[in-house]
Length: 110
Image (cartoon, rainbow, N blue to C red; front, side, top):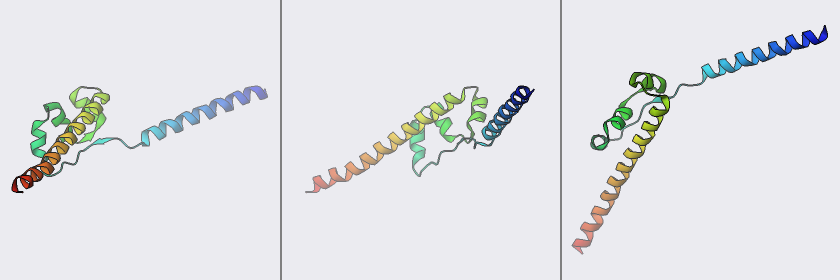
């Protein structure tokens, strides 16, 4: 008889642990898409492909956007990653050109 109660107790403990894990999963913060644009980014956005521009300008939860666009959440994440990388590269190239331009002008003056 003691063996039976031990099995029931073990089963109840596993059930309670499972329910706690489910509660923990539900309370995790949702990931949001929201990208802070900097002044001057408008010209860079125009250079990006439409899907990358669309994802950078979107706001909301990954899951909601995936459902709206009819794609997987992983697709949203990869598009967002690529769009951020492309925008960063455009920013860097612009700042590099900006830094090089005065040097060329200064060397012409000397």
